[in-house]
Image (cartoon, rainbow, N blue to C red; front, side):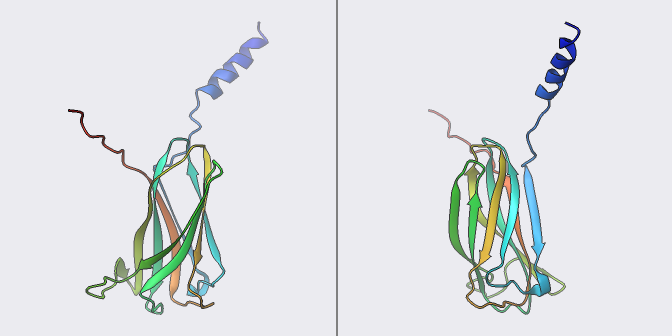
Length: 164
C-alpha cells in the first residue's frame, strides 16, 4: 500500500492539471526581409487550438509607400490538428473604393491593415493549426511589404433566438 500511495498522488496531480492552451487570442507578425516579399516565399504560423474551440482569423498586412498596388492577392491555407486542409485565394483591397484613400492605420510611412479571413472556424482536436500565407502577385519582387501577420481570437458565442 505504501508503494501505491506515491503513484496515486502523482496521478491525481497530473489529472487535475489543466493542459489546455490559451487560445483566447494569438497574434504574430513576421517581418519581411528587405521589405521585399518574394513570389514563392510562404509565411507560416502555428496557432495553438483546443478541441471544440471556434476561432476568428485575421490577415495583418504592413506596407510602406514603396508598395504601389491597391490590393494584395494571397492564398491562405489552414492545416488543422484534426487532419483537415482548407485553402482559399483572397484579394484584399488596400484602399476605399469610393474615396481611393488607404484603409488601415498609417504611422511613420507604414500602413497596417487587419482584414478578416474566416469567422467561427471550429476545431475537433487539440494541437496546432498550421496556417500558410502565400503571395499571389506574379512578379518575383514586390518592394514595400514590411510585415505579414496572423491574428486569431476566440469567436463570440452565438446567441440563439429565444423560443416562443
